[in-house]
Length: 118
Image 1 (tube, rainbow, N blue to C red):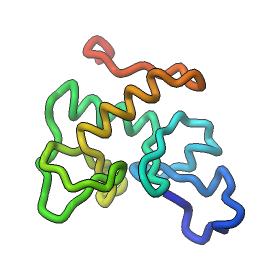
Image 2 (cartoon, rainbow, N blue to C red):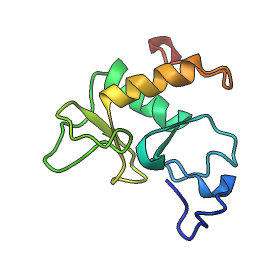
Image 3 (cartoon, rainbow, N blue to C red):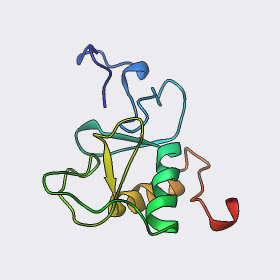
Image 4 (tube, rainbow, N blue to C red):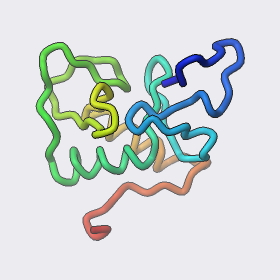
């Protein structure tokens, strides 16, 4: 997501925000994954989504009319929503894909959360 009032011809690191926590992840040097139409899921929100959707097999059921912020698809599969932005939702499939991409990235030393992390 982009900061309100950004210059589309001169995007700066402070203009790139995580859709879920609204932090400027690029300027804060927080690992992030980009979805469709510039949606951003930072590593910290991804960890929360992973724990909820994959490890705990939880999450909210899909609702009529909602779409995943990352893939823009309407899915019935469970989704995760941040308490900081209830308009941003990520589906289980995108959570798994984002975790795989970030885990394999040579730019970040990010690991998928595990049960023994508490």
